[in-house]
Image (cartoon, rainbow, N blue to C red; front, top):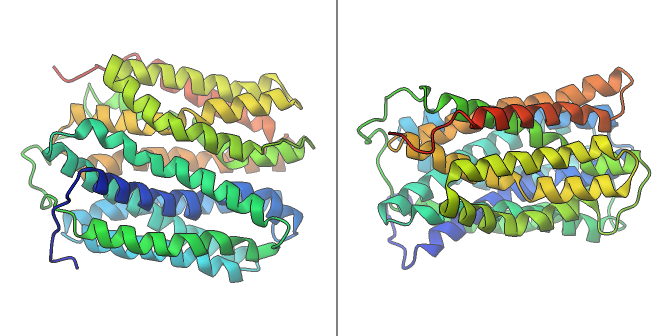
Length: 388
């Protein structure tokens, strides 16, 4: 399968395959944990502090996976790794159905994060390079529709099966859907024509320079800024004893669906840098709503809509702007960005756990996300729109 490249009949097929891979690893592998979190706590399977720790272990794996992806790609094993990690991610989701204690679940969430990091680097990077070679790089942001579809699907599955399942069995619906999707996506992406490792003329040029450093540091801030609501928003609603219809997570998922097209189009129309400034400003407003409107449905709504409608835009705009600054870096660039994003995501659950154990409310820990997004906005002002 890996030795017989297939020339797609349309550029939409690679975009779809990459999007499906993100449905699997991000929607059903990673972020299904968010709507499951309050249910697993209510079932007595884990405590709220343990839930924060589980999120941390998953993000540790995500960071390690991004680095592993770069290592494997540079040694010519990128496609095999993509195949194995996509299939493995679906399998890990299934194994979580038998994880009835915290230690077993922590190990599986760590491994799940590793696979997620590998796929999130290699699948979009592979398709972006293919699209760039076809003169269609402006369509690359549409791959991230898979994340929005995954969020919506994971939320719907969780809500539909909430009354029928309990404990570790709540992972089963996600696994049933993820496994066949992972098989098709891995099969298609493994056959997509691509470039050999280390072939760009600037592959070893410094990633960190005057042009790109503020962009990278801004993206690091965005990682901390978005991860608190993306991990804990349903738990905040439960902590405030507020019932939302639809649920906070479903609102996030619905808001994320059109956001990919919107930010992809806006970046192409006004430039990726101005679009990112708008993105970080709106995202910061969403996080601030939790702090300014405590114990209120309106705060949850605003946070869900504004963060859900922006976080994917930050990813696709940053990836595209970074590639314009370093056009020959390929997966090395993707891995560096994901590593930064992943590292600061580690801080979010850790800060939340420290705050909870110190007597703070979960909602009050969102102050760190607000500070991080203000940091991202300020640093973006120093980023050139393109390399001169």
